[in-house]
Length: 362
Image 1 (tube, one colour):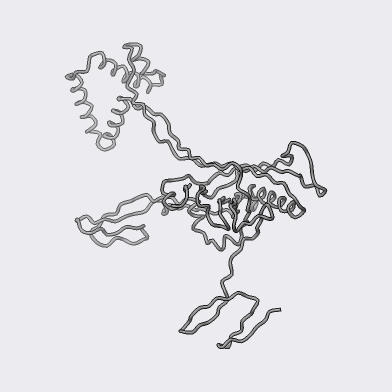
Image 2: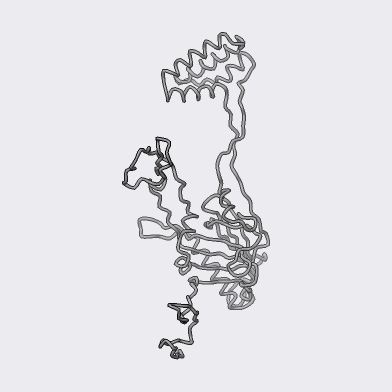
């Protein structure tokens, strides 16, 4: 039963609630304190762990976040003055013509990643539907970053062809003149007759290949002169990769309530990992996972790496982790090992470290 009493302002206070003091119009008044939003479900193992003062791994499970992408999100427009005056500003074209002596330029915007869309969501509304799982930090803690590189070659003939193609796009007449000038220079240059003949062999092989033949110009040069074209071999950046993290957790329940907690944790993670049937036409994506090393409550660990939002690619449960089948009276295995494979949905960029100045970053 709530206990109420009257204040000097004639308001009634309920002693069963928390209140905070505020000032309004010069008067000191007491208002109900803002209620903290709590997750839909909270799990922790072991039960006696002090999650508010202990280093733990916090696993948050959220519903899938949509990331719609429209043409206007990628391609935008900027406006600049053409008479040397001040810049007219920039922004997307939204049905308004630029007023003044200006010139419209198209540009490409950065695509919004799912991780950014996730971070832009209303945290309180997401938290209401989320599930929190506190687990001990695994015995093996590591992170790795992989960047994709590939070897690539560019022969002088290919480089010349690229230059000619660029010229042809801009001006076909200029390309014809350039070819003629180059041939004249070759005749009067220090390049030996043997090398000129080798170049002719390459061009001839390329021409024959256009008719459906399968001739390797490089092998023709080697056969005739024992030479090979300069390859200009170089290691080139080939793309970004997504990080994958393996986690292994051992559960050894010591009581009935702890057995139920372990069962609920495994069941919750497995349900969030698999897809949902949807409305019959489409299959809905599994839930998103956000892993975080914490040092008391939800505070980031001061040293260990951070994670971007991701999905679980694999969940593996070993119910005989000790090498033999043994259970308690209620059927709970005495030793359970859960292996998870987390894969982030977006790659790591240098700018991400600027946004996370503490610890080792990502």
